Length: 543
Image 1 (tube, rainbow, N blue to C red):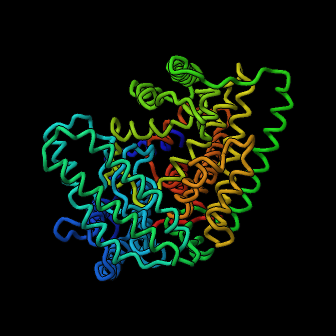
Image 2 (spheres, rainbow, N blue to C red; image 1 turned 30 degrees about the horizontal axis):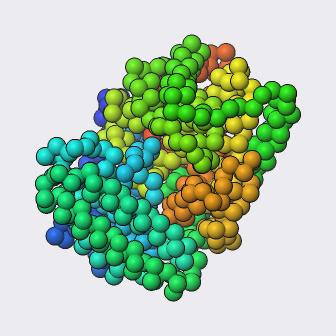
């Protein structure tokens, strides 16, 4: 049984392709073919190279979506392997995501930040968090000065921005005050990014420079238009509890309701703060952790933190360490900033090894490049951020797992940082939940998260707290995914360790877990155990 679990988790192409045909002769390849067509359909149609999010185009897409959902429902998966059935539910969740966008979220009509498409920094997720219009220009992925081919790519992406933002003024009809108000900052950020880009391409082809300036002028004009509209917006921005529950069950594939998640977040917040109090009592006679204070110290301590972390993973047999893992972390340690410190810098600068554990994200992304999944359905990022219980949940859980595994035994005060992090994640998750139940405005959610994060590190006068709540308002359930995913990873590991007893191997568990791919945690569980849950299942079994 143990060897079968590892083989299933490896997701080999032969296993997927060899799914025995059922009585109707349907195989996994039929699902892959539908998936390819679905992904093409999911993208908006282009009109003169510009994505069309007009009311007419979106209504047409929603009508046609039903055809794809019927094609998926017609597939009979009886007799398919577990990985093939899991792939089926990935596609089902993505289709439900588009349906939810059309029925409830409607970001193209309700969310001005949807039309921000120029990004200077890389996301640590498989796909950028939150809903965004097609055609993003990911400037972080280019090296400056631009080569002629890269200059052409950037130019192509920027050229559509004036028309897209002109279209946005017609499409945006929503009345959610918080969505409109806090989108203004995202639009200003795009303007600043384009201003910086203008200096970087000053000696480039004249057409590129001209299109950078046109994109910035259009962004500034859109910002002015947005500011004029905001005073007239009076509605709430949350989706409501019933819609939140539907989204959890049918898109995120999470086995909890809104009310369940409120209780779980309240419990985790209390546990984090009580554990912090005990750790502080235990450590009261120890010297405080000293933050990094210079660029030289930053380079030395962060480099040492990566080395120590990778050595710990190897020596304690936590997982199979690959040669690309250490470099993937080291490339993202950032540069020294003299302050004032934001929340995560308060943690990071006191013990640089802590956030290297959360940097499991960079392992995930590097694995997608170096060890792409055999199934085409899992090879790239899933839509609608449905990977977040796995990516954010595991990275959050990994912090405390490494604490319990002994990584910080030589630095007892680091234990306090782990519980401060957990308290912050639980507090902001409660903001997510209560914004969407329309019990809190975004400002109230930010104030709550700030007040309930220990030591005053999540400052209301800093950017982090409102930026996070704005993301969670745009992307329901994202704020809860860190702790809910953590709980589900811990539950899976608990069950496997209990079932296997003395035969349990942390390295084998983590390797199998990673090999499944970046998919919802409920589906990770199904694939590793070989069976869907019956008690709180969010997915049906074999069809």
